Structures are given as C-alpha cells and as structure tokens.
Length: 308
Image (cartoon, rainbow, N blue to C red):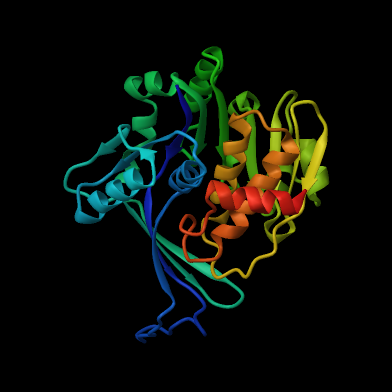
C-alpha cells in the first residue's frame, strides 16, 4: 500500500525573484535572479514527502515535450512514483511564470495539459488506484465540486483518509457540492488569507472554530509565524515557525503540506505534524521553487530537536 498519493495539477515554475522593479511595457529587464523548478501543489507536496522517506505516487497529466520528459526523470530520481502520470500527446505541461519584487509578486500561468486533470482524476481507472492508498491529498480547484464529493465519500468507505489544499478561490464556498466535500475530508489546509475569506472571520483563531467539522483536522498556515490547527478531538495546537533567510517563497505552503502529511500518515500527534510542516515550509524558501530546499530526513530530525 502506498503511504501517500498526491493528485492535482503539474507545472513548470519559472521564477524571477528579487527584481528591483517591474519592467515597463516594451522594456527588457535583465536579471540573474532566476530559478526553474517542478511546481504545482500536488508535485511539491509529493517531492517533499518523498525526500523524507515516504512512499509517494503522483497522479496528474503531463505533455510529451522535452521538458515533460525531464520532469518525469526528475520525479523518479526523487523517489516519486510516476506510474499514474498520464501523458497527453502534442502538448506541454502547465507553465507558471512567477515574478517578485520587494513587496509583491504576480503569476502568469499557461494551463497546458492541466486542462485534462479534472477528468482524469475522476476516471474509473484512477479511482481504483486511489482506493489502494493509505492517504490521498488533492491540490486543485476543480470546476465542479460535486463529483469530487462523491469520490471523497467513496474513498472514506474504503478506509482511505483524504486531505485538500483548496488554494485561493473566493467563490468556492458558494459552489454546489463544496460544503459536502469539505465535511468529508480528514485534513483541510488553508493559508491565513484563505481561512479568513472562507470563514468570514477576522482572526485565525476564530476561523478555526468556524471552518472545522466534527472529527476533522483544519490547518491554517501563518507563514513565518508558524501554523495553528484544530484536531479531530477538537483540541487546538500552535507551532512556531522556523527562522531562516528566505530567498523565495513560491511553493512553501505545499512544502508545509508535504511535511505535515509525512508525519500525519505515520500517526504523529498534531503538534509534531505542525512542527514538521513548519520546518519543511521554511527550509523550502532557501532556494527558488518549492522543493529544492526541503529537508532530508536527517536535517528534519535536527530541526525537530531544536523546536521541541
């Protein structure tokens, strides 16, 4: 049985960081502050957990370009299972250009093969594969939530636990099927802005009380300040962040998810899951992209001893 299956979109992240300013229209701005990384929530979560020794399979759709073949090789090298990757001929995987200046950033995204991800995840062949996992983590914002609520209910009936990082989609809470799906998940991840928006509350503490369903774990990531959560038993936990010299933060929240789920599937308590997530999220910011800076198992152990 696979410990963790991550399901969602795949991207190549082209990251321009620490620019002195944004270029004006018609202007070329040159920089050496650039990184290329495999991205997308499902991918970064999978790479983070695999580096910690967890057995992980990725379910997504990629293209057949040279970049896509490079990505498949990199995933295999990192220990992420690729047997559930579907290849779409004559296309390329998604591309995201992330551009950041001192106080803000923007993203420009080409969906590419990700246009097929939702239908692929709901196919009967993928459903059978997901049903053989210990835990399934979803990282996408689908056009329709109702089919995924039925999938989550089916997985629960098979004894498979589930989690979801909903991302930023302000209209989500009003869409059909979303609330039923949310109630079926074992773990739900938010960042602070998302939690406040979805809950209609003004503080993370208040948002936890609003968002959590009975028997569910809700996690709110607070960036450098760590994370807070409420567990299935209704008890709240908070873990402080790890201080690092951050270079670039793209994918840090997904690296947190990978660390948290690495600990979660092995039965760690909620406080330990939060500490592990905080370490992975923080260390991921040491280099551009969400996965190259994540810790090995030995590095994680050293930081866990310091945070206790």
